Image (cartoon, rainbow, N blue to C red):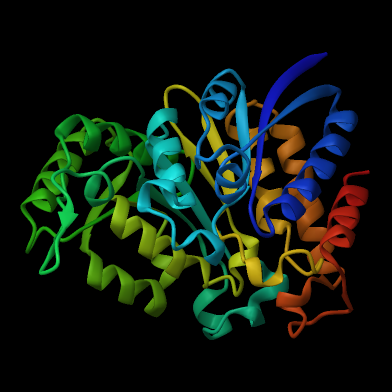
Length: 354
């Protein structure tokens, strides 16, 4: 029997609630497929500040690096927004990504037929949408130096090196080979020198993947095209800040940010998390949608553990729950036969595993 070491970071807000449901589903599918999962829980975010004085304890870094993969909830909240920047939960998250070396952020955006009316766009526009945003995660303007501010101005530096661009480009092209064989690289090469380097480098890498069609698009046009004709996209390759914005935009094609997972992968380990935040305003009420986190657990099984069958079972169970009309509160207005709580949705999906 295969045994996998999984690090767990529940975080703040709704993080503990949604991660608990993902673990519930993971335990069920592990039992059905004949492998075991060994969990170790670590702190990060606001709860880590409260308990240890820092947003990212060293124990968390070492624990995650020593595991096969990490399942992560969400961090942050207004409670910690007045702290010095280096003590805020978000600073811990940026440091965490850098320490883990997770340079590739994979964010799928899939429109379920069962929830096609949940999108704010017309059904004929979003039906069949299935795209993947590949976002470079540990470079660009969020990490560039110099940075700072005074009473008169603030400044940040957007920097990418050729090796950074090459490695994220390889990820995107390899993913496209397993999908519809199209990569759209998004930049702002008409204005930014760093984007021109990005475009030149991606073009060179594309030669190694003759079976994949490469196109380029400026980020402002890409934002428009995601709304006008999202089905044209297969894999979107882009940098950190553009990917941050475009992936959130793409998430709304599905109708709820509570549906979509993500994976952050690198050479050391991989971290799987929902794309939404900690939503402290609904924490503890049992109304958060756990599907994005459960889908993230499916991605973990598929990409880090190689348990394809188990991942397929979770994906099918989610689709079954939606097709049967079960909805959490965020989706109650869209063909709901029964509105269920966070834990009830976890139970339903886990039961459909059987």
